[in-house]
Image (cartoon, rainbow, N blue to C red):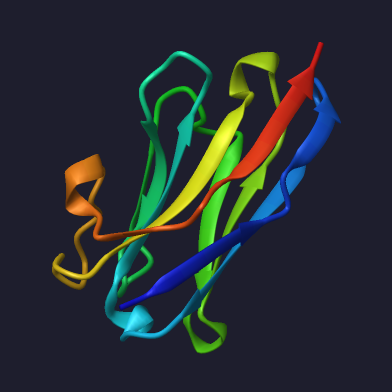
Length: 127
């Protein structure tokens, strides 16, 4: 089992930046693909970004390309989401997730691909 704990959320003005962190414990985390999802009030949880566990391959939702960057430090069991040029529509609860079943260079993007989830951290972007 892997436990994931997100941090770094908060209130920021439009155009600002935030860096989310996800701390992992337990399991062979360095061999899991990782991802970030978000869920706004009244909406379904949606894919934001993901990274393979080898090779540093990434995938991003079109809505965040060029503004968000996912990264990981496997030695520290950490995953990050750097968010720049934030918009009010980025307001959501952001979730960190880990996928233990994907090949080393593959990047999962579906909710169903991920086996472990954090509790979420709120990001609010004011206009």
